[in-house]
Length: 206
Image (cartoon, rainbow, N blue to C red; front, side):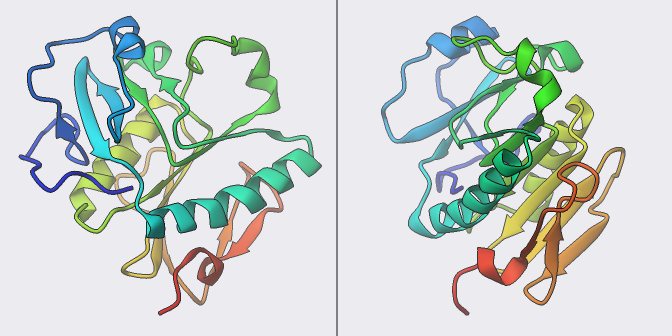
């Protein structure tokens, strides 16, 4: 996912740009906010932030992960894989007025009964994957990974197409537990048991 080029430092959500003129918001305000202007919006501690729409490279990487993961999850009845514009509400896990949109999300089948058709998913994803844009920094994406983990995610993947690497985060980690390169395999570990994917298949040709 790419962010806009004019992004001042923002402590609350350093991976994105604060929307000019937008005051503090609740989740209800956020869900009613108009879109369709080419941005993707998230809400972090009541602050509305935006990221530019997905560029082709990031879209290719997202699809290369989403399609095989969704097929595997469906074949094994493990749960639900979500698309890049689907909102997770972190209210119940200690982050009020916070809604995040992972590029790829997954949650267990046991949580499906908590989801209602016209509301965001009321929890953090069990697995969140983010594709870093060219202007996003390590510290930016580290902050977002920690947000997911504090909200209850068990596994976070941050894909760096330009570096040809994937950072793997686990619950309670302050730093990636491992950084994979294009010789390695992505592993669902105990979150998506049995799922593996060569990192090289996620990445554009060198």
